[in-house]
Length: 392
Image (cartoon, rainbow, N blue to C red; front, side):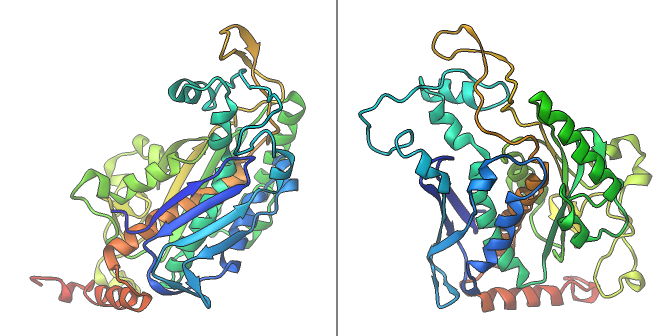
């Protein structure tokens, strides 16, 4: 565990976001342009708020890369917060002489109350600045590095919106990923996408927010990542933890997920096909109801992960709450906010799945150089055919 490790630091209205990535091999081509696309995708999506008009996220590589290639040493990234210019006193590192108004009106559904009590704060801003979804920009930047590694081996990532505000997409058998990226809500169903936009528009004048569901699909992952032998090595467990660590995510499922509970076992389990039906890929299945993972190990089928995104808790028409200092009834604090983050949440989920898969990849095929990892990977593929298995 922990072959691909990352740390992020930074507050929503601080100077910026810092990232350290450890475990990358030497010789991996990496540029700032490799990270730009996903950072831009994260900032898009219908229902975003004013902050996205201020920021234009760019990840600067500060260390660990020379002349376009990784060195095997830690990679450092930096994303500037343009809005810092408006917060230099409120978020100053050193003490300031002016009095800064404390935030004590807590938002239901946010980290405000548990964070303030846990860390003994009388100002909720000490919590909300780090608990903000602004931190997901750092995750997307790191996810871009993970994707760059996995792209060397043909692994591809996609995501789309399954539902927003009670409107659910009818997903075609073959998803047009270009059309998804062109959709304002990143929906594979154009008609449902229009209804999702309407649901967001209906919530906005009410000062309310809407949530939904996203799906991540990953192709090109070979059989054998993860393990069945310990709870913390199971690939689905690791992905589930990563997904649920994202702001506002409250549920995760693989493949059929909860829908499979309504079916019999004979309708759920993925039949293993005989060799004459493999069509060039070893150990194919007739279906992929388990979402590409069985027993905590990737099966070689497409990994399919779904996540539930709650409506964000910062409401323009605030809910009743209590004051942190007095305990008296108040209306919750309102910070500039989005109405819906579901389209962007799919991009963040992609990043977290990529980070987990990069870690599992290095765990399985690890080496100090990209060439060594490639040799280990190709050697492993050679033994997947039945005649090459031990004892066959």
